[in-house]
Each structure stands twice: as C-alpha cells, then as structure tokens.
Length: 267
Image (cartoon, rainbow, N blue to C red; front, side, top):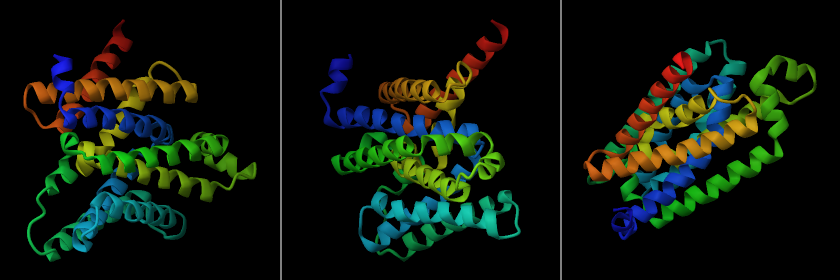
C-alpha cells in the first residue's frame, strides 16, 4: 500500500515536507514549550497571514512574503513587551487580530480570487510544490545554524531570563532572536497545517517528548522523531479516508498526547 501511495509525486513531496516540518517544530517547539510562549507563537502565526495577503497583492509567492512579515511581527511583540506599558497578553491579542485583518484587506484589494487561500488558513500538505520544499529546507538550515551558535544563550533565557541578564547574557537580543526563529518556523509550517493550527504542531510534539526527558538535546531529538512519525501517520490517514490533511495531523498529535499523558499518569 505504501508503495502505491509513494508512486504519486505529490505524496513524495508531502512526506519530505513532513520531515522538514518536524525538524523546525522539534527544535523551536522545544523552546516554545520550555519558555511557555505558545500563545505568543499563535500571535506570530496569525500575524503571518498579513504577509500571505501581501504576497497575493504583490503577485509573489505568499510564503516568501510571509517571511519578513512574520519576523517583523515577532520583533514587534518583543518590542511591545519591553517598551510599552501593556501586558504581554494584550499585545498578543492586538497583533493576532491586526495581522489577520491586514491579510484580509490585502486579499480584498487583489483583483480576482485567491484560489488556494484556504491552504494557508487550514493547511494543505498535498499541494506543496518544489519551491515550497526549497524554502522549507533553507529555513530549516537557518534554524539549525542559529540554534547551534546560540544554544547556551537560548538555554539560559528559557529557564531564567532575569538571572541570565545578571550573568551578562544579552537577553533582549536573544529573546528577539528566539521570536525570529518562531517566525521562521511558522513560515515552514504554514502550508502544512495553516496559520489556524500552527500552535498545535509547534507545541504538541515537544509536550509529548517533555514527559520522558528534561535534557534539552534529547528533548529536541525526541520532538523531531515524534513529529515526523505522527505527521506521517496523519498524512496517511488523511489520504486513506479523504480527510483534510492539516486537521487530521493535528488530531493524531492531540490523541497521542492524551494517550501518552494517561499512560504516564496511571501506569
């Protein structure tokens, strides 16, 4: 059966995308879960929809347009947190809604219809083309290189930001860098599960893995493997039962998290 499925090029690209997505969500999702910035990641993902709308308006690849838009949104959240006297929760809500509104306005201003708009809202891993895979591969390389260069600093601010500042770690710069990595991960994930469901893929593989280890390197490795396996299972189930791919992947992740949590509690 697997051989029959793999004879289709769109399924081959989907499986490659599942691996590339798992690398991004496994590495960055680990920091998202440890630092407890899941809601903030959700705001960045929804703000990225503004970049998708801008891409449609300018006639360029929406994923490419979403890269600078997502990074600027992440920087905006970081700046608001440090310089403006509003709670982080309020800043997240403002950026979340404004980003979506900008995307809708740009799409309304674009002549004609946006034929694959729903693939950016709810994901469609089966429609990924080669250019999307190249973008995802390059972004994965950037994420891996950045985490390798700043692994100690990321670890320090993830567990105790105030103490890291006392030790001389440039916490504001590292925090902005971490948010930028979240923004790049959002772009990697956007065609797979869409801006609506990105939070789940960024948080659930790391949350499952966190129940077995607190060693950050093992946590990242487990998260990548867990994400790859469960994303592939979700992809296969969506193909077999003709279901929405992004939603099926998230349901598989959610059910697995629930089962693992119950087993860990009562076993």
